[in-house]
Length: 178
Ligand SMILES: CC(C)(COP(=O)(O)OP(=O)(O)OC[C@H]1O[C@@H](n2cnc3c(N)ncnc32)[C@H](O)[C@@H]1OP(=O)(O)O)[C@@H](O)C(=O)NCCC(=O)NCCS
Image 1 (spheres, rainbow, N blue to C red):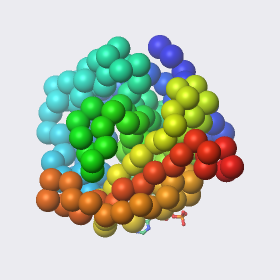
Image 2: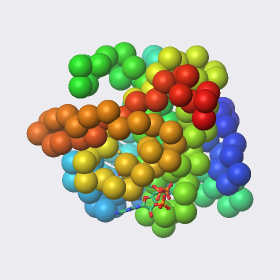
Image 3: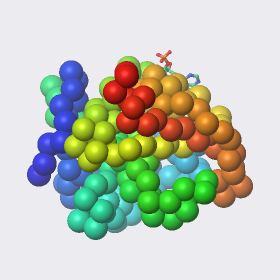
């Protein structure tokens, strides 16, 4: 298991097969999936498959979303991190996407922003990325706020599978200027 970052309240580490209960609790919640296409997970098998899918990305791409763990209780809060996007999205391809998904009981405490900032540090300092992008459903006000608080800039609205989404970006220069 690798720990990639620690922050004031969080540990960001490799997603493990043993995170299945936590991931199932996260992804079976309809409210969590409200702006993610409204298709919550219904089986633990699906949660296990999602973990394997991300662990394969670690091997194939050298990066993938990480587990977000409560530093003090060791509780599984959710996931956050970078994904190498290999399918064309809003006319971009082969770029790092910043994302996060937290269990509801942890919302509204600044945790997504704390995790997102640590992920951006890793992108620019360790992966030496030139730019990171992120997308959010236009109605996902919480996610919009997280992205802006983390230093990303709103660029435009685009259509993602029939739903309008916001497209955000942050360059390494902007991140360094902080
Ligand atoms: C979006 C999400 C990650 C935000 O996590 P969080 O830890 O609560 O975020 P933060 O506390 O860092 O910041 C959220 C901000 O948005 C605000 N906010 C949250 N939900 C909101 C809503 N429905 N309407 C308006 N503001 C909202 C919070 O009050 C907070 O505002 P503040 O900066 O003024 O304090 C979390 O709600 C989540 O996991 N949602 C489900 C998955 C998801 O949508 N992921 C993002 C996909 S793009």
